[in-house]
Length: 321
Ligand code: COA
Image (cartoon, rainbow, N blue to C red; front, side, top):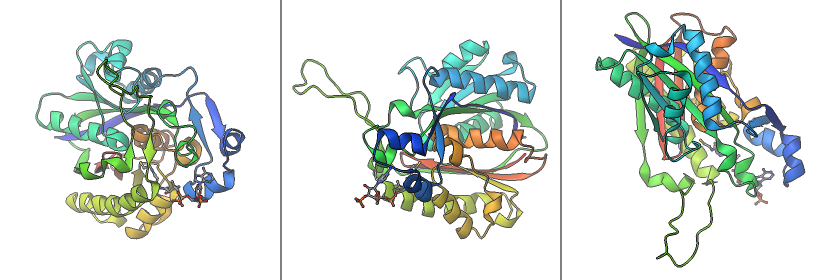
């Protein structure tokens, strides 16, 4: 039995902010952002929330899969920017779509969140506990980035992506690799709520994402190709036999470096970061949905997926579409 992706969906906020728009608010330029990252614009939430975008992406994925809410056994949502500490965003999605039978919870694996959700759903399906799962990555990063730190805020955007996965006898997940390195947690971090109980002397202000960009870059260009290589070999394939690589959309230079290290033409690496920026856990499912809706994916095609980011965390998979 395999775990097959049978439908995808996504949702981006209405407001589009170009690099030139950002240069009105801070000392930056389209030239700096484009040349270092490949990002041209991003969508930022105004009225949208992490839950509202998740719900829209979930509805689209269910429609695309031809699955009703009653059929969903499990909802797993990767996010670092949910609207509430509790309830979980996955529970908000469950209520909105009416998936009464489902078990729903969030996970935090930063930019690898969707990939970790895929592997958890796969484990449940392989164990025979559940048959149909809705997995999502959703972020409103614009509320946790520091808009006074131009070296991070220009990189990120908001949005949500979803996929329905189901047990399938023929096609599906062929191999998976995932890992974490908690010793490097500080290179990409966002502190949580400060403890301001009456015993704490100094009142702590809210804090935002901070990143050592060069350390994150070094981590990504070494770990991601190695993880992909391992996953592709575990699937009994070579990199040349992979039809598409759907990577976390952090930076075009990271993607170019991975393509070089795997000796695979860049054409096989579809891109959404140019118009979305980095949307952490939502990047991979939004890209997959764009590929799906643009007709790139045909049954039986081999697609390698990879997510990487804060934690540090990383995860790769090879799926048969
Ligand atoms: N606009 C204009 N100038 C900027 C800027 C911006 N938005 N952000 C930083 N700068 C300036 C810096 O102040 C610095 O100026 P200085 O040399 O006068 O001090 C200069 O640009 C170079 O900064 P630096 O941080 O060395 O740039 P870089 O070449 O390392 O590129 C990143 C920065 C973030 C693009 C790059 O490190 C990167 O892509 N890292 C990976 C980040 C990532 O993908 N994170 C998410 C992973 S999930």
